[in-house]
Image (tube, rainbow, N blue to C red; front, top):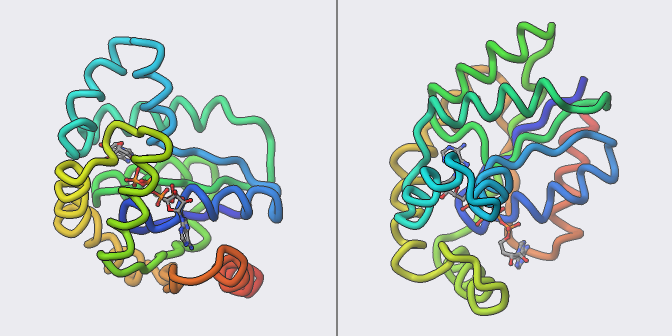
Length: 189
Ligand code: AP5
């Protein structure tokens, strides 16, 4: 099974590159951000709770996210693997993912770290905020999301280096050139 963690700061291109990866490698896609936005749209209890955190640029608590992930994973259709987009974001989430996959006789195959300079991330997110109106794409929340990424999420790079799964990907350039580097890394597995 091909289990890919696509990793990077807000605006690094995780969702964009996930779409190419799904088409090329026939894997399922789990985006915790998309799941939470759907819950908010449907005005569920979970959505109401999550909105408070997302609007502040903060992470939703691990226990909630891990429960969501377990339930989504249980209900996936058969495929060649999964791309995890926006999960894990903390060490406890990474440990929970390892347990969930190990229970299925699987593991993370590779962690792709999309590296993009902060000025470029801000430019992309502000532009998307103007075009699509995503509620957390405003300067104040973007800055908070970047702080959260740098403090709570980027330690996962070392976690996956120790696991021998880490792969650096330069996230600047055309979508095609970035995807080319991803394909090269995945095909080496
Ligand atoms: P989530 O939805 O995961 O958002 P994010 O990590 O902030 O990432 P984005 O969706 O903003 O960016 P992306 O890296 O996917 O880039 P994209 O391809 O869209 O999470 C949102 C919130 O939910 C979190 O803040 C948190 O509160 C909560 N949450 C989610 N998961 C959680 C978890 N596991 N634990 C706790 N809380 C959680 O691209 C961005 C833009 O750039 C697009 O407009 C795109 O067209 C453009 N772009 C992409 N690539 C390029 C390129 N190469 N050149 C130029 N432009 C590009």
